[in-house]
Image: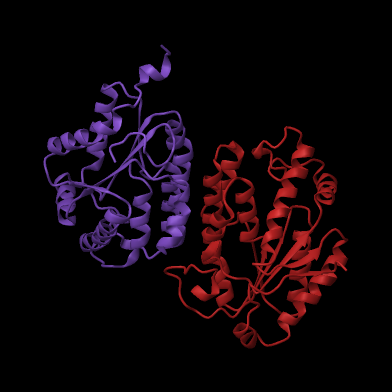
Length: 232
Length: 250
């Protein structure tokens, strides 16, 4: 796995994916890692998959009219991901960048499965997205993500709590149930999708150190920005 | 629900019996498709059947977004294909299924087959497109109005005075010459419809002819569907695997 030439997708760049529940700390880690990689002279492209304006507008409208179903919800997010992939992820990957992805297709797999979509159907849709060189899964108990959320005075959103599934009328209880489903789906994929599991309950600095240690061998022969832009 | 779709169940959709019939009319732009849908609707209503019509890009959810995206010509192949799929899923769940459950005949002016053909000529694999649309309801009847690209071109020019950017597949950069691009694009689409005939059970209508001739063939195929009471028909819907037959070509 440490051999830098044996990556799976065949593009000159490398793809590092950060996955995990909301509040698992993955975004903080992705940003810190991107900073470090840039400081080492590599060309880095950082991208987050949060709902784009297009999708959030449609979702807001659909929610008001009660039009959204698991299938349209899933397809809408797939459209959004495809747009990001074709516009933001693929070009830097082909240009030889280190692409740091905060959420990738796995986010859709867990969310859509938790909503009852056929998982083979969902996987087929995302077939255009290549397997990453590394997928870090930030594993953390659901109760911890809730605690972190409450501590930072963030409100639980309707879809984050899976309120559309009718698991409970109480938003906190629904959140715990729905996020629990997501976690089970993530846990299941550890083996099938070669996740590198990160114990996300540890201090931020310790986790970051581990990530850097883990990535270093993958980058041994990887060209820095300087060598990409100037010959000789 | 699963046995009524192409293999993937629709989660969260009620299992109401669908007593109406789904009739799909497929064909390229200027194949006479919309004219035939109008005639068919008129005829069925006169016969006393409630008809609801549906088509592509009519969902309240995303049709606006599709129009905007098309104006900008900025979306990639997979993105556009998925945006269309979202639009279709919305129409299926919020319009087609409720109408069928209410006993109406749903006349679909284009269906997943056009969307699959468009996606494939833009680089998607057939398998990907087929699996993507596995949640679609199997129609009771699919009529494919088949016309040669040259005929389509003459009709399009006489109808609109020019060849449309999208119907000419200009986004594919086949040729900067719109005339050439139109013919090539329509040939590729026709080729995709060609392989679907058999597995999706198309009834192929020779649409190189006049509308009245086309309708005569269509009426002959549609009539038996309404002869038996709907309850009886429902137990033996036209299976999607039934052999396609080329009507009116002899």
